[in-house]
Amino acid sequence: MNFFDAFKTLQVEEPLKSVFQGVEVVAVSLVKSGNFLRVKISPNQMITTENFRKMENELACQVLNNIMSCRIEYENGYEYAEAGSGAYVAAPEKKEASQPAPQPKAPTKAPSSYAPGGGGVAKRKYAPSKKNEPDPDMLYGKSFDGVATEISDIITDMRDVIIRGQIFENEMTVTKNGFKILKLSVTDRKDSISIKIFIKDGEEELPGKLKKGLVIEARGKVEYDNFEGEILMTRVSGIRVSKEPLSSRMDNAPKKRVELHLHTQYSDMDALTPINDLIDTAIKWGHKSVAITDHGVVQGFTDAFHKLQDMRDTDFKVIYGVEGYLVDDLDDPIVQDPDSEEDIELRRWSAIPDEVPKIPDPAEEERIEKVKKGKYYHVIILAANETGRRNLYRLVSYAHINYFSRRPRIPKSVLNKYREGLILGSACVMGELYDAILSKEPEARIEELVNYYGY
Ligand SMILES: [Zn+2]
Image (cartoon, rainbow, N blue to C red; front, side):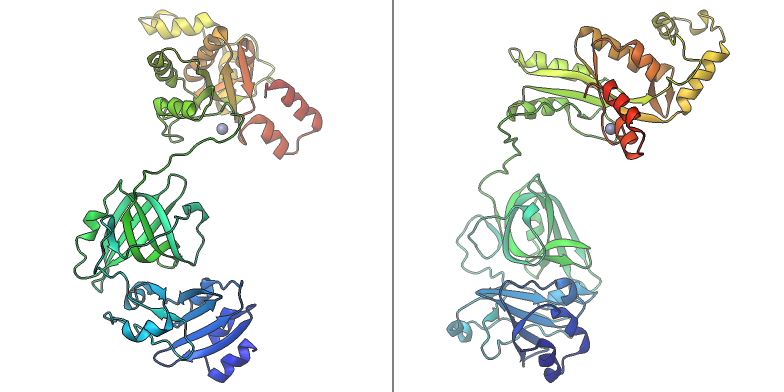
């Protein structure tokens, strides 16, 4: 049957036509009890609910044996969803008569239910039912079986999907029409999703039961929510306490890497990882070593060192490093012998700062100003040995004392001077090498940079 012709005979409103574009429709029937349309489509065809959403109708689509109920919501989708909230369940035909669907209060003109029409296989039953639930782990709705889908594998319009995750947000809102909506956000530590539940009369205790930190399994439908602008689990049929704790992430690579670019909580606005946890995780993952490369600073070294001391007989190694801000000042004709170590030490440690008279050197001042104004690149600097560690401290000190301008900058001339014992990495997209590649610099320049860095 040609779908559009079918629609014409049914005198369905014009906008619906676009819904099934590209979909071969096997049969179309209008369900009498309401403004519903039932469409039977060919197997393995996808309908985007993006389109559905624009219309004020409800479709029940049968795709092979799976009953796929698609609800169309208007912009004020919440009230409308409330009017017909509940799970859609497939049930044998013969039981229909004995299971009348209860009628919830319908706050809008939308019909709250429909009686399955001729040949109907989709049947709506209002879940959750709170009667006769023996499962002590159930917190809400009907008991269910099945395996949870990874949150990261969830796409829009999945029915009867089970998700498993830890609640990290629990928020109640009351709409202006008086509907109570509970939004739970759960994470499986890989990805997160929110669950939306309309709290009915008599279910007021539910939000208190679904506490932050609790690991739950929830079954419902996953769909795009216009109001939230994201994919949510809606029409939840059941929630229960998960029996197992969340499994934490593992590195399953047969040959483990050594992470050489890594930020801890000492990288301001860039990372939150405490070094203790970081090292514990690396060890649990079978890593032999890990580098610490905070942005411009080395405060994490003591934490790491103490952690290694606490572990006593460990052969786990921490590579001490930094992600620095490198300024190429090598083309500067006035680059000479910058910042002698004694200079810095005297300036830092002199009890009376003015005791050491600064001899103004216009060329030197100009050089420093140029570095402060110059373009900086990210660079990874790792200490390969004790000499390298000391040189790293020198570079970090100079960067903060002499060349700080929004960032602690390291002039390349100074880096070259104290390069002994250090391994230089080209860092990231903000690094000098990638910048040269992206700005299509000549091959010779790129080669020069490749040779400058250790990796
Ligand atoms: Zn970077």
